[in-house]
Image (cartoon, rainbow, N blue to C red; front, side):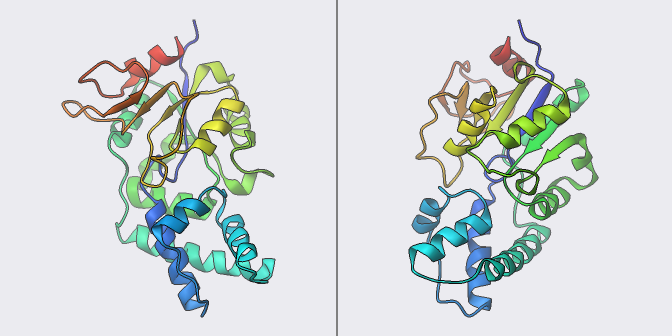
Amino acid sequence: MSELKALIFDVDGTLAETEEQHRLAFNAAFHDAGLPYEWSVDRYRELLGVTGGKQRMAAFFAGVGDTTSPAAIAELHRAKNRIYAEAVADGQIRLRTGIARLLMEAREAGMRLAIATTTSRENLLALLHATMGSAHRIFEVMVTGEDVAVLKPDPEVYLKALTQLGLPAENCLAFEDSAAGLESATRAGLRTVVTPSLYTSHHRFGPAALVVSSLGEPGSPPRVCQGGLAPDTHVDLAVLRGLVG
């Protein structure tokens, strides 16, 4: 029987519903740069199939025949990140239901906490500072898209997190919101809890250990989409230990 020792979290869509704010920031960056582009909700949902903001823009530009250079894309991405950080600092994003509770429960129980994300460190820290303040230091490991050669669905980001934790996959659980993230975690040998987000509710999550609408709160259980969560139960450490035991 495996013992649960660490929880590893994706960020965008998992810790917080961030993707809509990212979409708005991309559009604002396009506008400020004088570019004739505006990504709709449906278009952005399609573009999220490409992980990484710079990669997403490059794929879009290539698809519309725009020859914007990699250097210009990088500058546009920096502008977009500044716009996103300003929105986050203004309090426009909050942690998803149950996240703050579970993090505190885990910390009090001596569980180790990590992040494995393909977002930039700049975006990650902006979100953590705005939503958690100094409490974000509970994450002892933070692996971002800047720390890996290949983004999700490749497993590198999770493999690096496991290496830095010094733990095998069987002693950890991953938390994701997308099919690409689930594939990344699964390929790293991790069992995964999925909480689909605004832009990923249509994804398929076959390999997931548990799929729920959120982590829920006491007295306010989530909707169970896949897995054996008992009725009227929220996702707590007892539930998570049962997934690896």
